[in-house]
Length: 70
Image 1 (cartoon, rainbow, N blue to C red):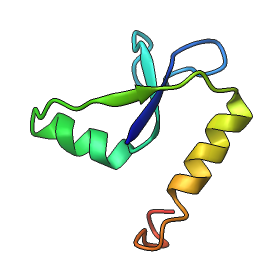
Image 2: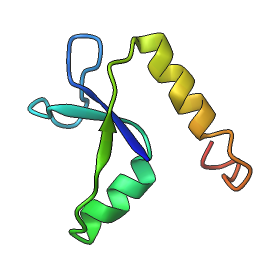
Image 3: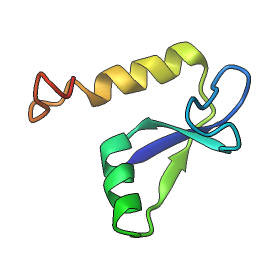
């Protein structure tokens, strides 16, 4: 699933200061859905910064992710 957290002082969006959520996992899926105007559901998590990093790392440890994507 696409995992998001609420934007906050700890999680600041770089490209859109008005964003309400930050994508932690599933960014490529979210981006593809956005490109083609496909509605997408996401899981909203209440994570610390370290927990968010852990989710991000585990997302990129999948076997079918290329070294470039990691």
